[in-house]
Image (cartoon, rainbow, N blue to C red; front, side, top):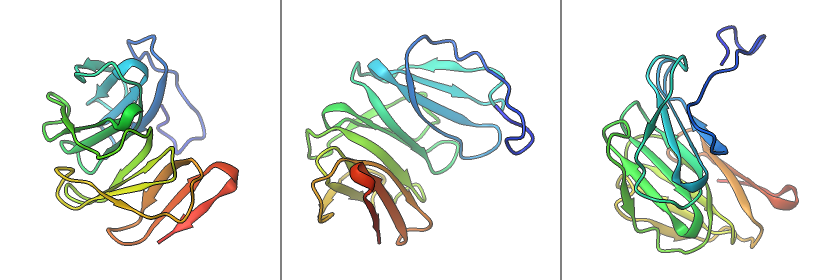
Length: 166
């Protein structure tokens, strides 16, 4: 944790021994981290304390994105997508339409999100993850991360140095 723009870092106690793979902090107080075996932890006090949440899965989770303190999505192995609208108190599995590993996800608001996969596919939702539509990426390279500036302008990165922009 840093409180000085990354000049110095303080180690925090996560309360888990699971490998953590991604974190999303929609504001200075709230953060959610995900990891192996369905691990999800959350802070509501800027990272001073973390508490476990029940994900409802034992699949590895590789990405998480919160558009605000309440609306979040976690993604992972075997096409797993989990969604919460209450800050992670309850997580609901969604149908991604793929069995590929989903490595990254980014929501620009509670409705609009994009996820990227092991097989080079890109998934897009405009209804808060209730449905996902596959998009052609033009590559079969592994896609690891995605970041959108707004609902339309985004960048994806993957294996072999690939960068995709829309």
